[in-house]
Image (cartoon, rainbow, N blue to C red):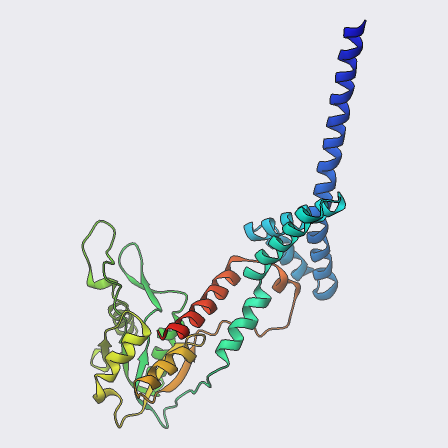
Length: 303
């Protein structure tokens, strides 16, 4: 009789535990889903169905899932009076959001891009040379040069050349020492200046109008240009690079005594109307924030 009662008590305890655990899971799910549901609803209310659908789609991206789980878990822990754990999870969630926020990334990039005024040359007063800094190209698996995320640098140079606004194009960039193709020795095709030159030639830029100078970073590229006074001394010479990179590039040029006209390409700050999508964390925003950090660090060490 006693053994039977003990068994029944254990079964009751196990049943109560399962019920309690299920309720805890439901509450955790509720708090985890509360914030994303509010985000989709706000997107629909403020900007309409199309934006709400994009917000809903972004909820399935890895960074959004991590963010909302952290926020939901934090609220759940606070609801259960576990204040230290809850606040810690909320702070971690805020860090994830800040490191992947399109809104924050755009503001940071815009602050950098607006530091230098960009000029657009015309055929009425063309530049003798335009220096296109490396970083806008890469290689396909077949070793064919292609434009990458900063490829607007090359694209802008081509457009200006064919518009008659630039007479000659200087491409820069040397691969880092030890950079090799998979399964091979060092290959000159890894050099950005060669990749850029091939793309320019394929885009009907006269090969005689293309000059290559070396440098594994912006500082070395400016030193290489300094050593070639025939391209800038007494000439009208412009500098084409990504807008976020332009302030640092111009500072390095001035440090070498070079007076270059800034021609910004590859703008990254979002200047469109604000929508709820800007509040949803994503990996592209993380890349932009990393780019900004790299520019600040580069300025600190003079590179």
